[in-house]
Amino acid sequence: MSQTIVNQLKKIISEKLDVNLSYHEIDEKVSLFEDGLGLDSIAIVNLIVAIENEFSLSIPDDELSADLFKSINVLADFIGQKSAQA
Amino acid sequence: MFKKRLEEMTTDSHTGDHTLSDGRHQCHYRDLPGIFIKMDTWFEKETGNAQNLMLRCGNSLAEGLVLLWALLREKGLFLLPRLDKKIRNDFERDNFHPFCGYKIWTQNHDKDLDILEPQSYLDCLKNPHVLEDSQISSQGSRIYLRTSGSTAEPKLVLHSCKHLYRNAADCVHRFGITNSQRILIPVPIYHMYGLGAAFLPAVIAGASVSLLENTNILTYLDREKKYEPQVAFLTPTLIAMFLQARKGSYPYELTVTAGDRISENHFQAYEEKFGTLVNLYGSTELGAIATSLPGESLEIRKQGHIVPMPGARVQYRQATEHGTGEDQDIAELYFYHGFGFEAYVDKKGRPMSERPDWFRTMDLGRQIDESHLRICGRTGNAMNRNGILVAFLEVESLMEQRIEAVKHAVVLARDDSGQRGKKMIAVCEIHNAAPQSGKELRAACFGVMQRHLVPDEILVLDEIPRLANGKFDRKKLAETLHSQSK
Image (tube, rainbow over all chains, first blue to last red; front, side, top):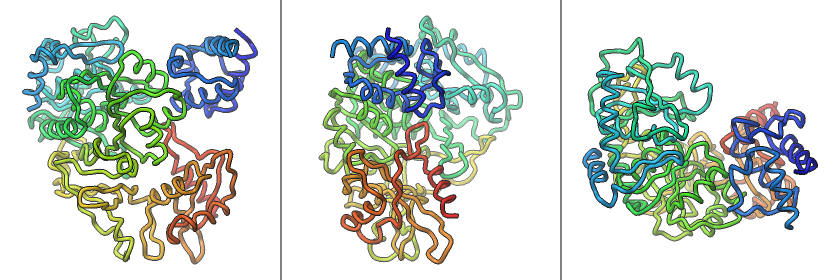
């Protein structure tokens, strides 16, 4: 897992999403959903779009899954693998 | 009728194998009689003769089964959303309605719940102050729903099972729902849309049903992959999310949407990837009132042209006494609905007043032809300009459809001090590639709409404020505009 990607994701969440979370408040080990960081359905879509723009990726429907958003660490692993394939 | 229909579902050898599920738990139609007998035993033991019950309801299968049981067993059920911690706390603390003898909720939503054993997941709390003399406590199966309160104080709306059934049966016919379909319902079944237009129609058709809660694009896609539905009931917000985040297509036989308008561009884009889309216009009081017809052309459906349900008739009443000429096209909509609500009731469960034959929807509409009409927004979202009534929704649609740079438009009235009084202000989000000022956009408006529709002023924002549900926050925008005008 790349710490750089983790940090980029924290930056996206704190700066580009309307979630009222500061960079330092974001725990990369907790869920991104309501039982963790509390991202609502709109924020999740905005995060997907922001990730695709930021990392120049396209995430097909069959790879989009709630499991992917279990934590920022899991998400960062996925982005790292996708970037390596590109 | 509902009882008879459900008995047919449970005993039919083909339909009996169809399933009701919520992604964690599942039962077959043939299991329902056994589940309901166990519920009879539990409710009799725990709630005695209480006729009216409050159910904390989400989109779990357990809650859906309690709902069906109540409709079959001549009970009154007040559906209360199970949404967030605050509501949960309220529910458990002090918000008993005096006409409800017990609050009911389901627990143990984890994976080891045995859906066939309702006594293992039902729980209740007795109302210490229940009224014994409720005037409507023995009027057959009934559901109480609370209006959203978007236009006035929330009201309690009483529906009879009989009318819910008839309205649901009309939805089955209108949407062509069959018992061979798998239907995904991610919209809440404690609201009229999810209950009356989706869940009950799916059940009485004998279709397989999958309820989804905590809906977001990811939970939805996970379910879609596993369940492979043919029909889905969505909201405009979900549709916008699909268009924003999904790359692929999916072959739905039918998607139903209800609520705010969908722009023609979005409507077409959705249909190209996900199949036939129909609009449903309804209310908590009347249930499904009108829909677009699945068999009609995309051109007709995307313009929002809808046809009243068989039990409904429309009256177009003049929305302004000063209106002349073109504005007569836009009228306030009143509906007669043979299968609408019984009455508004007070906190004691007593009918508050006679239900009018013609229900004032508080919506504006335009008659398209003898059978079709088009909704033009709420009566509050309109203003009179030079004697002509202008519905903001129409201006928004024109700007989004005809001015290329405009991505989204929200039109509001602003009280300006001075001789001119109210001004019509449009707030726009524009496409990144096409930066334009408000003045340039207004100049463009003159070329694509009639003079009386052109906003007095256009403001361009990077992002129009939205509510948590994705709808534009008109209240916040109005407050911002009001403070600017001071």
